[in-house]
Structure formats: structure tokens, C-alpha cells
Image (cartoon, rainbow, N blue to C red):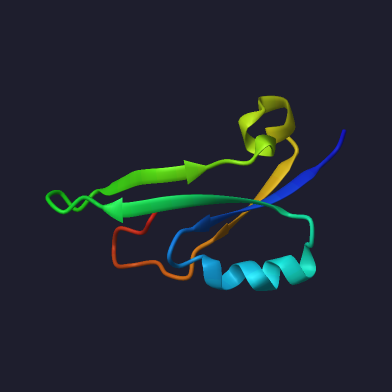
Length: 80
């Protein structure tokens, strides 16, 4: 069974790590997430997601490693 490796970056902060990851894993599939805080409640909101096929397809997702690239974790309520 084929194994998959992909990367998901947090838009605005994870882009700093993409270049280094591409140097090591040249053919890595890239996805992205945009999570921002709700101005009223402070709860995280998922505003955008682009998911590579290796995650969307349940049969492939079983053998997929995902690197989450995020340069910051803020306060008591991190992005995830």
C-alpha cells in the first residue's frame, strides 16, 4: 500500500516553513487552512481549507502523514 506525505500550512504564519520543507520533500502535496478568531466570542473560525486528495480519499488517508506548519501558537486558545 502506498504511503503519502503532505503538508498543511496555516495561512499567514505557516508559509515561512514551506521553503524548508520543499528542500527536504520536493514532491510533497500542499494544503492550506485559514483560521481566525471570531471578534465577538474569540472562538476559532475555519474560513478556508484546501485539502489534498490524499486526505479527502479515506482509503489514502489511512496511510498519510500530515505536517501542520504554523509559526505561532497564541495564548491559551491555540489555532487547533
